[in-house]
Length: 148
Image 1 (cartoon, rainbow, N blue to C red):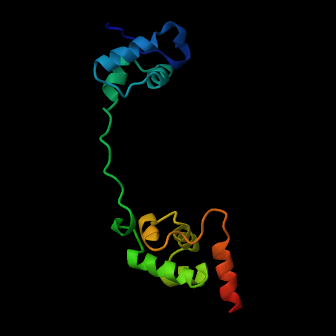
Image 2: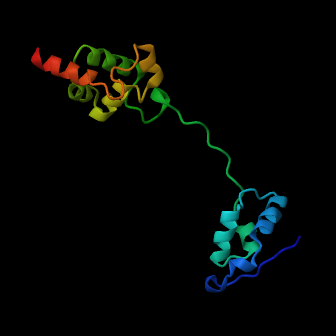
């Protein structure tokens, strides 16, 4: 195969003269699966030679470990006990804003928990979401608590 392209100035690259699919096959034969058609084409337009592309590109990174969720996350302000207590308070009619202040989180965080968008396993174990999409149950609970 041995196709090589010398370094060209970006203004003088004529992609019609370059057989990019054969360059992709050559890169894959060398074990460089990260060099796709799009990557090679963009580098040729920027003036890279094929040798530079092969040398300067690092092999694909290993996948990161899965993200920790819930209380296992180091930045979590809430624990499972807090979330269960939040759900109890919301079901009893307490407004979102009060619950948020009590636990030191934003009202949007409490609303996401009430909808089951976050803390899904905990919410599911404890009666499911309070608010489903387009259902004004929580708003009705808030107005009921204001009237009392």
